[in-house]
Image (cartoon, rainbow, N blue to C red; front, top):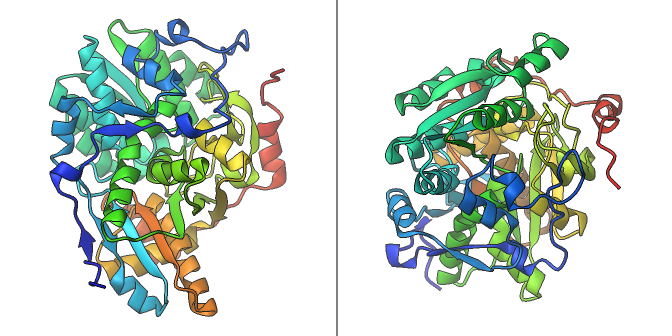
Length: 455
């Protein structure tokens, strides 16, 4: 058999033309969003003041298998897609493992991550609706960067609330957003009522994605011609990100490769959900089986130590209730350096799949993650984002198990983006100033005690 090339590229003609909706193959659908006041399922009319009309339709549709990608979005995708599937030959050699390791590289665009796949879609539908602009939150800054790029391309205003600790740790990411015309505010801030309330309750807080979401939603709903857009968690986002998994599967099928395990980092669930979607679809239909592993930080362990329950999507408790694995909307994690993995909850789709035992989850400490990031950078030549390095950590661990057992397993993981704006984190790791804070059971119980009571 011919040697698999280092990089498997698809032709433009092989690029997916429709997003895949994994919910269509789920026998047990994700639980609906609930009105926080009535605890009744929310329909399109109730969601309309917050989200764009077409995105609401995608959010609520559990049955349509495929959504055609509009030509305008496909044209934008072609600036940086299809993205390569890379065989990690150098890493395999360094590890001396019989495992075959592949990674889907999503960092080959200016935003530096997979987030652009959904940013352009959400901005497109906002523009098509005739809106003036959009508001959002961002953790590490990848989502805010991607959305600012998409809005600049389409001529929309973009207002970003950036988690305060990331705003301070990643000034260059902030400046990229401003270069693309976005206004960026550290969250929580004094700009919004909910921000002022959070600051009063938590003086000196470093913020969280839950805080920033609250501010962004308030900003959208109090400005005429604006809507809120989100970079993860929601069904619509996982739908758009399915292009990652569809391309990955097409590239693997091209060479007759069947993965044994698929690994992705998990914060809210956008890249993991997108990567695994077609493989999970096969698993749900009984056509194939895969071991699917979600990797999260030990400092924010939504899957591995959270509760599967209805909870607010934001710290300010102004958003709908979602049934998900959660640490509680009031949970503010330690300021770890994987800013995109600091959300208190997990996608309702992934939460349902995890609860049914269709996928696994592991949590890993921060210093072990950066050890893997450094090893990957030295062998494969790409400096990975701290978020991506969580998947790298477990991919290496699984490859070393193969070395111990002699099994020739095929591992696929998602390299969600690059870490060139995360050098403060690498500096702290190299200087021995990085810690491995892990919340105690008592810490987590504080968040669990405030979960809303839903019948």
